Amino acid sequence: MKKLTNLKTKSNLQESRLKENLELLDHIRTDAVNDIESLTEDFQHMTLVAESIQRNYRALLAENHLLKGTILSIIDECGCLEGNRCDRCWKILKILGIANPEEKPDAARKYRSLLSQLRNLE
Image (cartoon, rainbow, N blue to C red; front, side, top):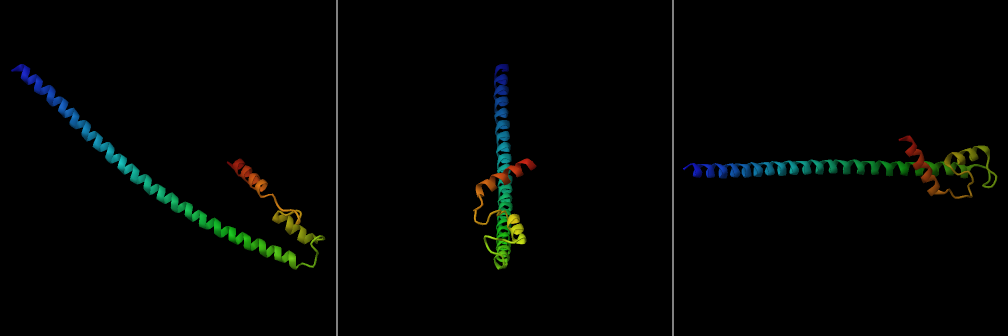
């Protein structure tokens, strides 16, 4: 009789451990699903933020383009000639970053310069 009782106890102990492991695995899986849902919500929020930043940046670029066009039209309407600009027009051109109007600005160099300045701010 003692041997039967011992066998049942060991069997019940193994069974209860297996059930506990199954319950623990179900709990872990439920937590994982909840974490994935939370991450999905975070990614959706980050996507909305990125889209908003993109819209704002496009609007800013459009405004900058309009402003630059307006300023360049002021220079074009000035009485000075293209090869012989007045001091006011030269100051405006220098502010716009065009030291020599005949020379095209090097966009890659400007981009690298801006990036290095931004990195130095960090």
